[in-house]
Image 1: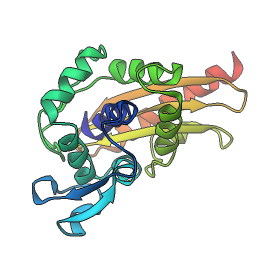
Image 2: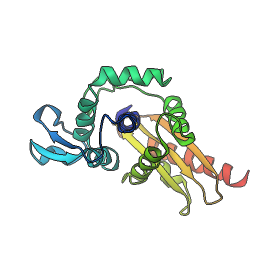
Image 3: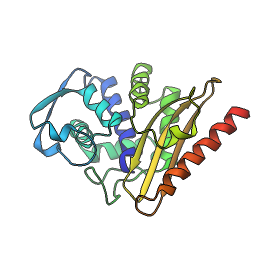
Length: 216
């Protein structure tokens, strides 16, 4: 799954918000047990620092912060609870087995699982319309733009999340075209470690699909 596992974690977060179990302005404390390495800068800020829940969720996606992810997983009672929820959503191939960064690739998902999840969110399933709009707004801020966005024209908009652990590279998101069409894209590429061919493949697939929907 790499960091694409953060997409279902974000959906679960907003489910908890809708239920009233988490408040967006609620202060979360960064404790030592959730500080992990890899993506993001929260690990360098120091223990016992406080952040709003919304800020933690945004950092998890926008800069792919691993410490932010672990904070939310802990707040939602751990990976076993989340894995059960993913299965209830119909995500047959999605589970969290390890803390991030999961360089061994033990955390799992699939392009089908992520596509169907994003389609449900887009239709207004699982979370409220207000939470859906916030989720899309957060995912539109993703800073890594080297995969699916490279296949789109400038007028298009994408709300997405990437993943990269060297041997697997991925991107999944909701794409809005200037024609008014909207579609879901999710691509995973297995590759030799850090081989640029994986990135180029995802870019080419994105470009091909975009041009197809543009003309047909």
